[in-house]
Amino acid sequence: VQLQASGGGLVQAGGSLRLSCAISGRTFNTMAWFRQAPGKEREFVSAINWSGESTIYAESVKGRFTISRDNAKNTVYLQMNSLKPEDTAIYYCAARTPTVLHRYRASYNYWGQGTLVTVSS
Image (cartoon, rainbow, N blue to C red; front, side, top):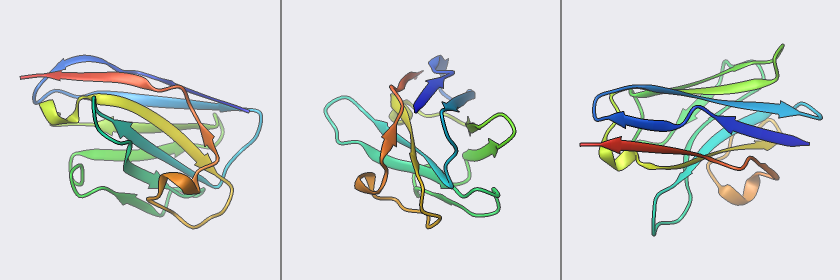
């Protein structure tokens, strides 16, 4: 099983980026994005269920970020708008088999390698 995150880069504050996470080897009911800023712990960003009808977000990104998935491509996305310098971090995709959406890092069994997002002021 592999989770391959991509789409990170350098963007100015107020700009947008779209992250992708391609999964190979199997499918998962729940997919999520976490991020880790320099010197900080990895934190939850968003999660989505299999159908895409249920999503949850961290308060810090609610209204600016949108998670989605394309099950035919076995890929999950994170559309990030109105980016702020404090969004700068390595973004990781994560997966778990159970259907319940979780914000807890320990609930996720599979992780991608991360993609760096840098937002300049």
